[in-house]
Length: 170
Image (cartoon, rainbow, N blue to C red; front, side, top):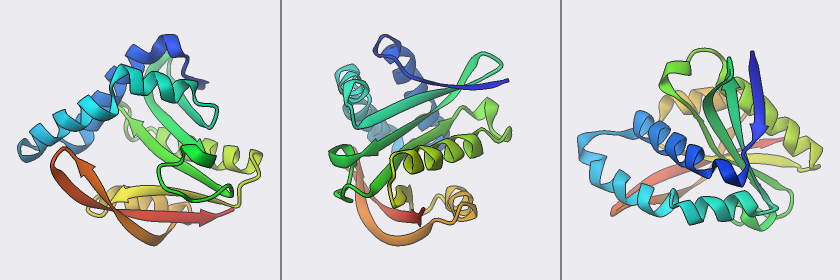
């Protein structure tokens, strides 16, 4: 049984733990260890997460699989988007699933939820950033009709990488 529920402020510690775990499961290498630690300190600070949960233009959801938190989704509109994409844009900022729940189709469910939310809010396009070397994620997004429209630098500690900006008209 799969459920999706919006994260409440009082769940911020669970969100932080999940965010850190999924980030490390996805991107950890010994070469990136210090940069990941610096990024976590900045991006997943409790106060930063609370501010995001209280932001009317940002929504974060847990996905549960058999009543266990399996991952999360973070979406943004208007001024809460991480890039200035205008009022017609709907950003999928984060889709992360714990390693032990991968392969169950939960990522697809979260993507479907994202696109449905964008339609509900009457947005004309959905966009996201993906690391240029995350080929599996790029292939996944391609199945939903996302195309590369630009790129930007993404700083993680003192490491600067390139993220592709992918967009899907809806």
